[in-house]
Image (cartoon, rainbow, N blue to C red):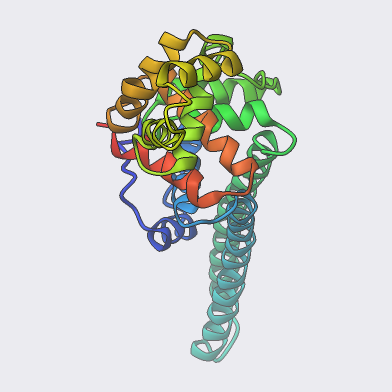
Length: 282
């Protein structure tokens, strides 16, 4: 199994690792974890998923060229050297030249076939998690921790069976919708606690026409929750979620919040949500 991965890797370093094929010898499940790391790095550098996919596809084309050109060049050099150092053609030189050339061709074929196979698997996986056409698969992929082998294995099995994952994960049910909405508003307004600050300012600027209890009651009606629940979320839970290590359900809620801002074309806010998940992970 692959060693523990870290989010502390630069974009250029990740790209170099991919170009050098350092991840290619790993299993399909481990490759998914490397893809998740790569997407995290790209997103953290304000890159779109299309840019991430384009990079992986360009890397495949480059590898095919690199595996082809040097071997043909080497074979030509070897044949030329045999002619130069053997002033007369003899059967030993011919057999040696042909044997060495065939060996190089076999090595090239082996490496190129592996590169092509990896390329096909990469393209298949990128299609499987296309955020526009396969939202459920992409949601699951984004919810992965880069060291969560078992969850990556589930996604890999779905890929092999060609079965899509439902758009909404079972953990993100209607009871959690109010948390997602309040978290989205809190991130939209700014720093942790911004929602509570907004409520305080709203109440203070109304010349006592609005009470906090009334504001919480209105928000509860909008969200389909009790005013007490909304009050607890705004005054305590939102700050806790944004400043402590998220549990698996909380991480999925944060991912749902992030996707709201991604869909709204607000990558900077989405990146702030992503940072909360990464920085609070052990």
